[in-house]
Length: 151
Image (cartoon, rainbow, N blue to C red; front, top):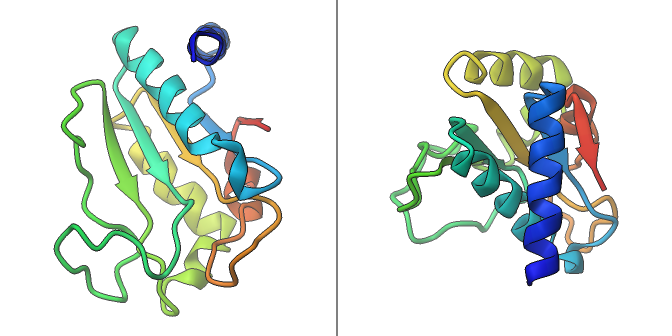
């Protein structure tokens, strides 16, 4: 795990130096621990004093049963601090009604531009490129709005 932490810190520092504010993390398949790595980079940036939003787009229609229900037409679940002062977490509310929004790069770009008014950096945890499940979001629209994508 030390190698992962070191790599996460290197990516965090390099993106801070470059001024990258919207970073996506994607993997070819679901089994590669990209979500963990995206979170490690977000936490490293948070430790550097930045205000970070980690947006979980790597969700399915059956996700997150431990929070209060969200209307099916709402694209996002409420932002939580996840018990962690280093970052806030935003999760997609994937439903048949909201799924088309997440494939609209214009809508996503506007939404995250608004988030960048309050946050130093937004990290997108993107779904894998190869879907094993049909109810996953596609990463393509979200990846197209990022200033950097880490594979």
